[in-house]
Length: 331
Image (cartoon, rainbow, N blue to C red; front, side, top):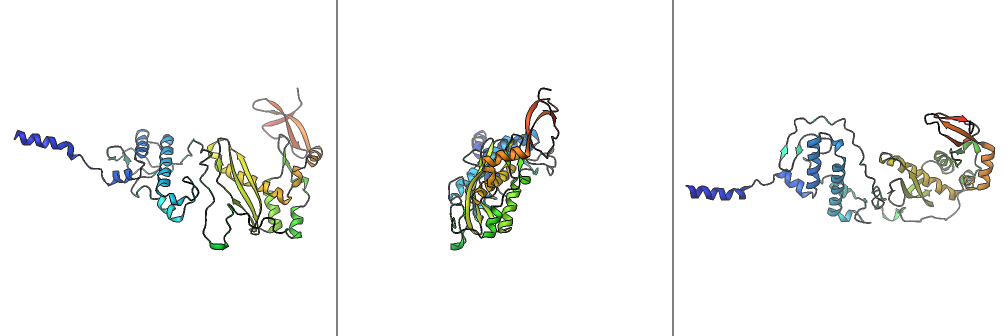
């Protein structure tokens, strides 16, 4: 009896419990370590917002595994996001359907087993916050122009110069584009820089060609630096390439990146319009000096909360607004 009992004891280490289907699915993604750390963090803190670093690491690993699994979906480079529809559908299924998603509290996975969380709260009102890390210059926002397949009729505006300098626009359109700038449309920043609001550039293009007859085509990915975003755009009018320019826009927090991307697009449009002669006076030093003399005044203001004073430029028909108050220098 003792010998048989010893034999059973010797076999015990070989009879370890095999990973269940859930474990196998997680291990097959190549992200099991990151998944475990993320879920362990939630198990300890009971709040996804306290696990930003773990979630960011998990998301990055998911992207890496996807790029390795579907290299043909990225014709430019391994980190591009020119995804075909088939690749996009596969990317949604990197994790099995039964796996918990962010914001769900069905169960919490640990390194040894699935354990139900009795204290899990309803996360329906949870608002996901952006990772604190700013993406690098090489990664950008993974929004390179899509490569479509529409046959010989398609023009790839990400690389093509189709129609550039083919012929002049009709006189009616040229008259609108080259119209003298109305001083009432020009604004001035507090540091004395004059500019035309971006919406007025759009109005000029709409008046000259009509809504829908022009557009901005991206010619590369959005580059994100710690303080600004930049992207190259092509202005296409009536199916012809007119101009190419790179827009830029500063931002002060990661949450403002999406707004900065839109501002970057408007900045590129403004620069493209220079080639059409729109508001060309704003790049003429003599016109700028004349405008500042006739329509702008310099005032000294005091910042009410801090009591700091500085010089500010204003249009003569504008007034100083809170939190500033007009004052005399040295008073």
